[in-house]
Image (cartoon, rainbow, N blue to C red):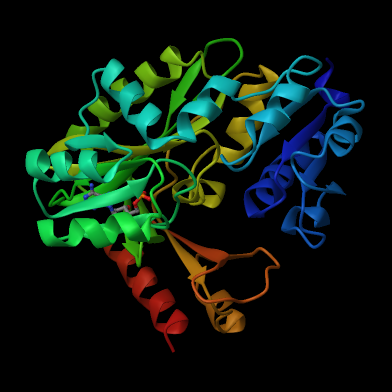
Length: 367
Ligand code: AMP
């Protein structure tokens, strides 16, 4: 395929799809999205096929004339990928998608790659949950194996007496019972592997969550140089184990200065939005390079960077834009409590300057 005529299909038309297309347009790539929402944010930057992901006729129309298919969220039904995969290259590989859709498979992959994880047990009955509580203790979290994100599908179990109510709350679906670890902080690594096998790894990112939703990312993560090599080795093992192509994010807890893997996302990730202005190559451009088999770009951070999510309501944009070194991204989504509506990136030459900029942004977001 000549990249000069590259036509890329993306399953999902949310903000991640929108930012992928924005990164691909400078390379003259064209984009088609499949999304059930008629006003999907990506429809501004490519053709939108508005249909359910499991609609066979829509999938056939979606696939027509494309060079390859990728996706921008991990709950794409396996059946959609199964229909497209025989006729088109699908990246990241379907196995990565299946693994990331199930917290148990994900943990098993980490363990197979010799990556430490918090103590956990798979539970599918009330009796198994009781055994897990006895073995792992409390505090813990009961997490549904599938369809959990941003803290959804998670119930805290702070005392053994709460286990039964937690089981009712998740409505008897297969779960993981996972020890609540007293982490020092949360970090993530973004890594890419190209169709050629080339690998590129970004500096670690430190993430701060609010109500289970990512709020602030700082990159490079402060005082994390000693964790970088370990994170890079772990990411490389996962990329190679899955014969992965594209951008991958892995989230970790830092406990006693060691990394414990929490989960992975087989796609561009919110903790990588800082790379648009803050790295030599954005995660979106990197993902496109990887799936097209092009040389990967430098992952070097351009100074000290932070990304702050705009959640729930649209702040005073003029005030944000008036701050020097501040970049505002809006996804054209309707405000709703906790919803990711956009993000703000600040880039500075020193940590102090970056922190002052973060403070100034937070003041505007919180007024
Ligand atoms: P997740 O959906 O697994 O990414 O969880 C969302 C957030 O809940 C994480 O970013 C953590 O802040 C918190 N969390 C999840 N699992 C654990 C755990 N085992 N111990 C402590 N906090 C956790």
